Image (tube, rainbow, N blue to C red; front, side):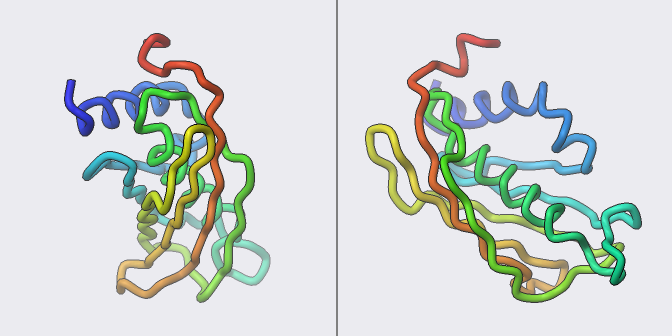
Length: 142
């Protein structure tokens, strides 16, 4: 299996049991190893009391893209830290797209940047994540 095939297989296995992302309607693709694109339509039940998308929903979308990207190596990896800057609001009906890219990966720790865009290609949020490897294979689980 090549690197891209391995990354896609790891993502598929992880997503099979990801009830949280599925409940939010998040779908993803793996265009190349250690990258991911996750998509979500903002539903009416995702907006806060001010009528804009709840920040936790945007964070969840970015976090899903982060998880897919950092688990591309058949090495179970979890978030150690993450932060997000919200740059513009999203509204019900918006189509959000989170693009995750690996900045650096060491033996146990990785650093990732995830940009979240709306359907007009406007930057909505900027997420930075640090991952840590648990040293367990993913593909053996499926």
